[in-house]
Image (cartoon, rainbow, N blue to C red; front, side, top):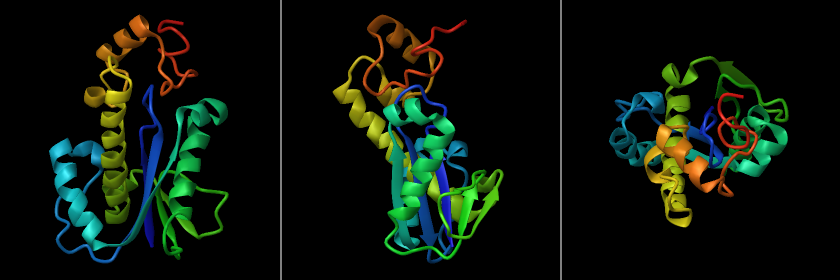
Length: 185
């Protein structure tokens, strides 16, 4: 059984990233929870323990252009599908945080708030969050001046000011309010 979750859905910039993980054992995974409830240091500490106990894991993503083309919901599902398809083994069943992947024949269960009740979904949440955060830290060096290392592409005041002053970077989602459409409209 694989847990599947995504991060970055509400960002103004960067990809939406999904992870799928089959945990071999839960033993030693104390503290695994929804990545949004953990600090960056806690996620970084948990990641190697999760990966050591994973029978299999993978990542999938959809970039800003895909998000602008097919919308964030469909891009989220695409990233999740890619994560599942990239797994080195085919899961027998998917536990997905609040989504259904209609394009996959694998039996699946959608669980609202799944990253707070399922260890495998929570583990996927952490894997995806750490991967995306590291990617945004890299992009901070590629596209300086936007503060991607600190806000990870979310709509902070700092980020909105940078977009206003500099315009959008190639990472920005042009269909999102505050990027392609000014705030207040």
